[in-house]
Length: 277
Image (tube, rainbow, N blue to C red; front, side):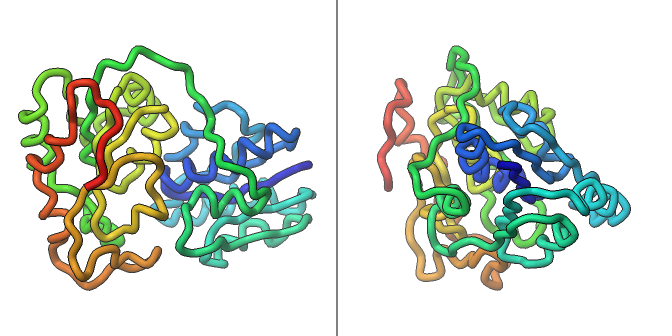
C-alpha cells in the first residue's frame, strides 16, 4: 500500500504518529510523510519513512514553501491519505492527490492510539532507537514563550534549577534550542530519567526509551502522557486545555503549585518506577 501521512507541525505530534507509521511499514506499506522542517530529524532518526516531503517555514506561515511542498504530492496516486488533524484545513495539502482520504481523530483518548486507529486497533508499538549507556538525569525546560498559551503548561525554569540542586550529581538542565534536535535525541538516549512538562521533550523521551516524569497542569495526561508518572495537585480548573484553547489565565497556578521538593522526593537513586501523586 502507498500511504501518505500529512502530519506537519509540532515535534510531539509527529512522535505520537510514529506507532501508526511503524505499523504501516511492518505490514509492507511505502510511506510518504509531509512534515515541517523542524520535525524532519525525528523521521530521519527512525529511518523507516520512504519519502519525506519537507514544509519549510510552516511555523511562520511561509506560504511559498508550503506551496512547494503541496506541489510535490499534488496529482499523485496513493492508496490511503491520512491527515490526523481535527482542523480540516490541513486536508487541503492532499486535495489534489488521488486516493482514499481519512482525517480527524477521536477526542479524549491517548493520542498515539487515536492516530493508530486510522490503520488498526492493535496495541501501540514504538520504534526502538539504539540503546546507549544510561547515566544522566535530564531536566528539559522546554518552551516557555507565550505561543498559543503554551507558557501555561510550562514549569518555571527556576524550579528546574532548584530541582537540579536537590537531586545533585549527574543532572543536566537543557533549555529549548540549546542543542540541535539530533543532539537532543542522542542525549535522551543516554538518560536514565527525563523530567519535563508537556512539551516535545516528553514525547522524544518516549522515543528514546527513557523513563520520564511528566509534570502536568492545563493538559490532560491521559491524552498525551505515555507511561510516565504525573505529578500535580488538583485544582478546580485543572486540565482546561481542550486541544485548541486554554482557559483565560495569566499564570498557571496548577504548574506553579508543583514544587521542586515535591518532584525530588519521587526521584530515587536508582530511578526505578516512580509513584503517581
